[in-house]
Length: 84
Image (cartoon, rainbow, N blue to C red; front, side, top):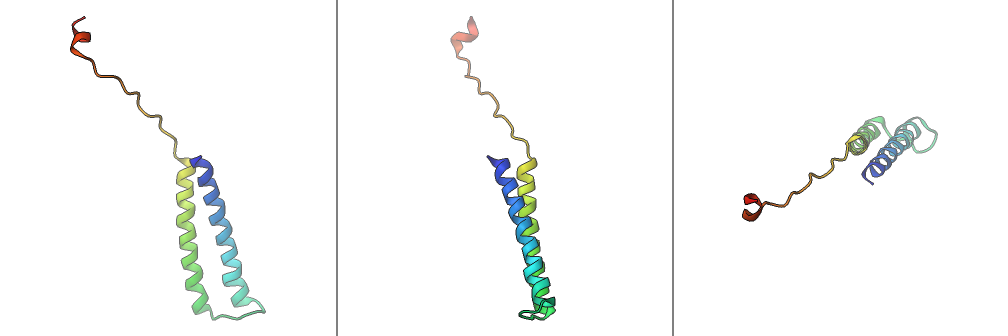
């Protein structure tokens, strides 16, 4: 379950980063639609990419971490068992 969720987080962060680069930087600064100054859009794009990078890193850690089996719990010995 954890590995699948980590992979989903990685894919979602990559998709958000790619769409942010296109819609936040390429389309608004260099596109023919709404023109936003680079001084405004560049810090926003960098901030979103940093957050996406942290999310991708978290997902990657979830995907690559091995699951550790719990240690077996042994019942404590009683005085009667020790004397036998």
